[in-house]
Image: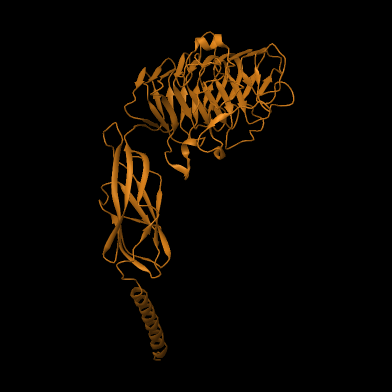
Length: 486
């Protein structure tokens, strides 16, 4: 029996008609492109700049918006980099990765995304080096360009968990970028040169079982921080966001640590000290800033330590939590106005605990203890909490301090300024007052100006910024910073 060819013929005619319709439609679309040489593209920026990019480590992704402000569609005949792949920039146009893109249609009054990343090869130089390229768009025979710029920095890259097994000096010639963990072995000293810059990747942790000697200067401090150099939001850099890395942990075998002119910021924990015997000092901290932590700024159990001219500030938990041990804080500013967790439920600035097996002695001379809590409705509440519930011995003294707690007549509070309510603290702002970000220098605050113990101040005549606190007409101020009029 012969097959009837008619249905096949009909099907072929219908298919041909579809192809013809599509072709005509495409021709109509193609013919609708504007050929006017005055019709140009617009861009969200004329220069796309990347913050410092570590060599061999890819950058964060940035974007450019490309606009067709004309009524008619435009045909972008090519999008590409002037230097090809040599500069290290990479492109993604409307979801497609590549080096060169051709015949990109952009309808009238419409836009498209161009995503840009960059990876910079090692420059073998200590100083940062600027890398530039042009992102070129060709429309109607004319080329427009957006400048791409990135600052490349070679680093000492430590990956996969690194243990320092012998006495070592880290210089300030290049930054250090630490992934995973860094361990300083027991009996080993790691010395950081003034001006050393230490970047920590997410979850990076320091475990110091030996000794850390970090001695910077006012002009060249040593800085520990996260490695995100871009912004979370347009006006909010990651450098202000906590929980960028884990923190510095000092083991029970760690003694004789020194931190002078050191900044530690943006971790989960700040400084964490495991219990030790009290015969030898665990750490001496001076002229430093430990700030902006997701949990606690400083946690210590049964340690002996001293801190002078240092700011401990801003955390989701306590600023200081001390359980047993012997502590002396002199001209320190302990303050918590953490913008990302203003409630801080259950976490006052200062927490003191005495245990039966670990008595506590804590002395505060010329210190500020302040935060966003109210001063409380009874003594030793507000921003101070004392716990000797298990019968542990607990001795503390606030001498010439400004403390946010309910006023109390007690020999443990010697010439103390009780702040809060009608006697508030005032600090300098970083940016506008609406940002609620402070640098915690006093701002014409009578609660602390001229109220410090002059005998103590004479032993430490310069504040954290090198201001002489002994020459003011009113006398020295409480806290790590002497008041200086703006």
